[in-house]
Length: 592
Image (tube, rainbow, N blue to C red; front, side, top):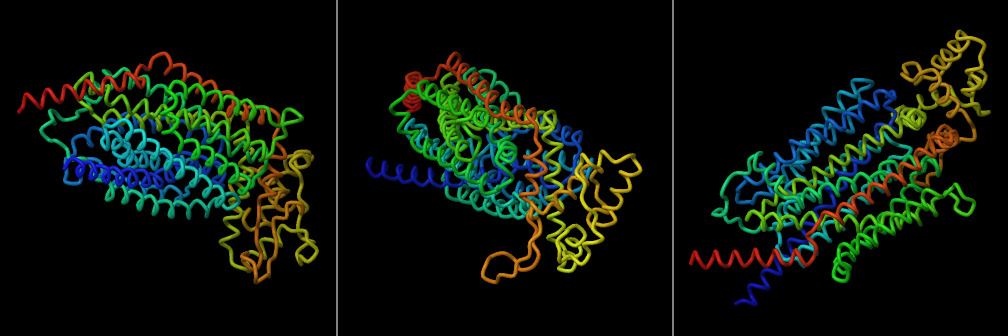
């Protein structure tokens, strides 16, 4: 009978760990779309926001995260007080997926302009925070509920982080490959596809995982907000683990958040090259994380943090050096090689931090007699979102103060032109091309104005001459007439479109390829001409320090904090589990 029960428990564990961890793929694809790419979308999809408007959006990110200070613990309270036949976690996982899916589709489909977009951003971002939290809090709270066994807990934690990593990296690769050079339509399609997959993955978790039956006799009081803050206040180890996660999350996320600007500035506006970098990122993380359970058996968590920090610090130092010394050129090969050290080191460090935070559940039970999984674990997504907000503010300041944001609007303008071009009829496309191109077979060639560089435009004798030139462009090019771009941006855009070296327009009539027949528009080379080729040293140095030195310092702070303040090592964890089990046995004997 005991063997039969053990077999049943093993089967349940096998089912739960796969349904739970695989279900996380869609979650992290969606999370990456919003957390990483929403700002990239705003920057590069041709919305035409000013630096002031972009800065306000960065500030609103922080305001949105302050809302999370209330939202996350409150959701933890709701989960703790949910007692249904489906359990207390799974109903909210599914509800949150459905509601946040609707918000995400609207997020990448509705495109007001100027300050109206800033207002729209704030509203849609708050709605995203609310709806995704409904899914996020109960999802992560399931980990400690699925097993109290350290070995099983390590396996589940390892699997969920690995599959979350797969989702994150797959999301990054698909988004980058699809949207670079096709931002507006690309993000709209990606949003719909990712939402559908997210809902399917949430269904796998909601219907595939079997929650342990809740002993209602152990429910002594509702999880009020006062209790939530009391639990957090009384769990000092949770506080230190959460603070360390803040430092780590901000630091480790900067390379990802600013990495696209780095690659497009140093290597080129090329979706394939960026995707290759992301694939190297994915391989290092998935391979290293898949071995975490084995590494945890051989090394202590403190040892793993030391090894991982050495690896990531070396990688960051080399990333800082490439392009500045002769024997380390800046290209996709060197970026990928040294990125492997960074991402591999960070993946192990993150696993240790998550395990440390998870183990504070038993620490809480040891000190208070209550586990409070949802309350304790509500800090993990809150920390992730709060860290992302501070990271977003840093990213905004770096991009605006360095001048990179203003320069990147040249690329955004090209993306906007491409979006309009793709919506044109065949006749409209020909008219548009003939209003710009100086090719020999253009019947309108003699009426096309030769593009001026910005320098030559600014050298015109007076303001009247400058205004006349800009007006000619607006009268000549159909999409320029209602453009919100300022004169210099319009001049830059026209030059990039007309320059024959950029090969923006091409005609295809090959029935055997996958390219649509007729006129096509490709902006990658034009984007390089108005972005990477004109960036100055101040921009490059500011960006490089922000993705290498600053992350190293922040992750070092996380490591030192855990080393000095976190006391739940392997030996202490085993000790408190034994004492918890002994107390329960005594209680059960007294009841019988």
